[in-house]
Image 1 (spheres, helix red, strand yellow):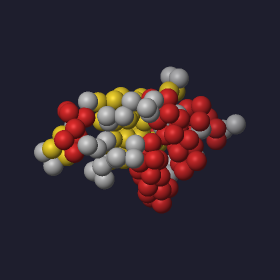
Image 2: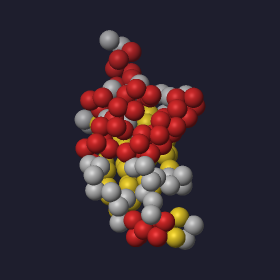
Image 3: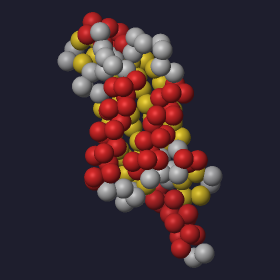
Length: 133
């Protein structure tokens, strides 16, 4: 049940939020083994004039940058899967935005299973319920 929060600063208007959401949903399913129906993606575009790398705006650098944060249930993915997700996410975002700055970030946050959920049930509850069936 990953939740992805995505911020993108870009001059390009040709890439839609839908395309970004589809790309990241597919990666969460393919690389991290998440259930597609539980993947939520929140995409926000920012003005590149308001995004800075090394004190210079992306407008002056003529670049795009992004920050992808994904919250996943603790202990559901190993470090190799997480590294692959970072690698693939950067590659896919660079495909969508060919002028992407290397200083763009992907952050995976492990959240304790009893500390979050959806549909009114924690992930811990879902885990235990599946074990007693």
